[in-house]
Image 1 (cartoon, rainbow, N blue to C red):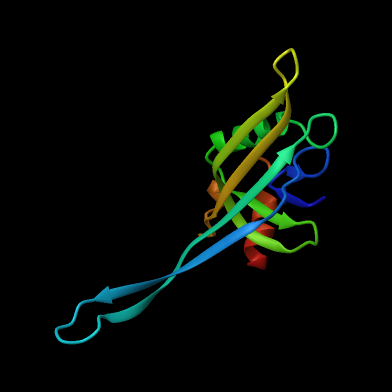
Image 2: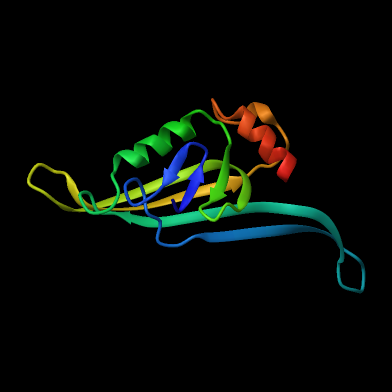
Length: 146
């Protein structure tokens, strides 16, 4: 297992991401001042996002149906715990977007290669009602860890 997003497990049989890109922002408000630089004030943490680009090679690694499973999870509007294969808890995340590009087609139109990108946003605001169906207990455990 590479990583779990809720009940979806990233593996060779489902989806294999090629890299994990994480960007965390912090907010600093600015107030203009006459004759000097603007005054800045730390307002707290901003957005935290993860991008998972990868490739599905049907019959070799992964299946395009896994992208459909992630789309179904995103359709619920729920948030999901994200846990690395090492056991490190990364927090509670929503699926913000999924993109895919299909190339190298068989005669029947099935793609031999599917490149994808899954974009996630962290929402850890303690709202258990945002957790996906069937994992509210896991959400309570995660909240106590975070």
